[in-house]
Image (cartoon, rainbow, N blue to C red; front, side, top):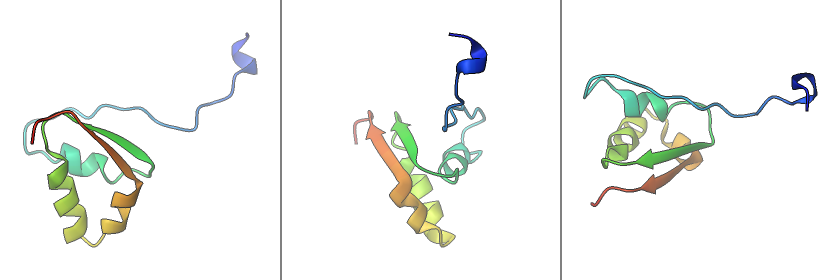
Length: 71
């Protein structure tokens, strides 16, 4: 197949890198959905609290969480 015959994907894959407490989880939770969030360290709760606090709790409906951490 030639590249000219390919279609662009309708999703974005990205990685956010930064120091602990910089707000990476809260930033990622605000991207346009749907979002698949792989929670390795039980930090999604910070994004849930943040989105509820700023009045964007409805955004949580677009986030699918796969938890790998032990609660």
